[in-house]
Amino acid sequence: MARKTETVPAYRLVRSHRKSLAVVVRTDNSVEVRSPLAMPRDRIDLFVRANSGWIERKRAENHARVRLEPVSPEHVRRFADLLPAWIKALAAQHALPLPRGIRLRDMVSRWGSCSQKGTITLNTRCAALPETLQTYVILHEMCHLRHMNHSRAFWQLLLACLPDARERRHQLKAYQLVRADREGASL
Ligand SMILES: [Zn+2]
Image 1 (tube, rainbow, N blue to C red):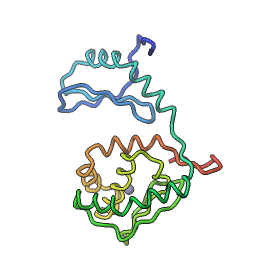
Image 2: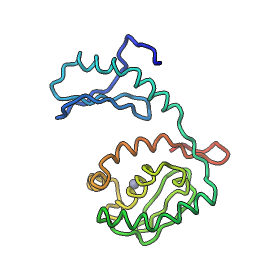
Image 3: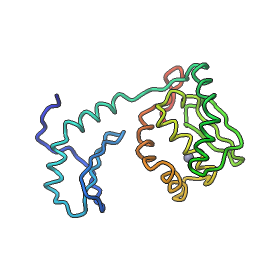
């Protein structure tokens, strides 16, 4: 059981035209509260206090960040086998262009990339991610086939394909790419 806390955890308040309160714990352990425009601050504090146990649990989960080392060749091969049909299905589903080529490479600095020529390179370590995050990485790179940047238009396209893309992006940040010797850079 979570300890009862008297104080309200510090949070960033984002007001918008929404009907209910929601609390989000980010991977950097900051707390964001989304609230309707006119909700009084003391009611928001009450809500945050009532959810402080849940916030503590989420923060503890964040501490358990996953360190991803290179994955085995068999694991990569299984992932690679799935990719062509998967990418074809995503292209059809979201009316996105098909890449000219798909490559897999072990990388410590990025999950994927898309070249000017339309070749998508995915990190072999994507093979070890949950499927929801694999889909995020693949769709992210496929949207670069339309927009070779991270412009507003790019994010609009990605969000149209994947409405919870931002949430998945935050989840992906819990995965740290490390070198086999465990001294690599984090993402
Ligand atoms: Zn990108």
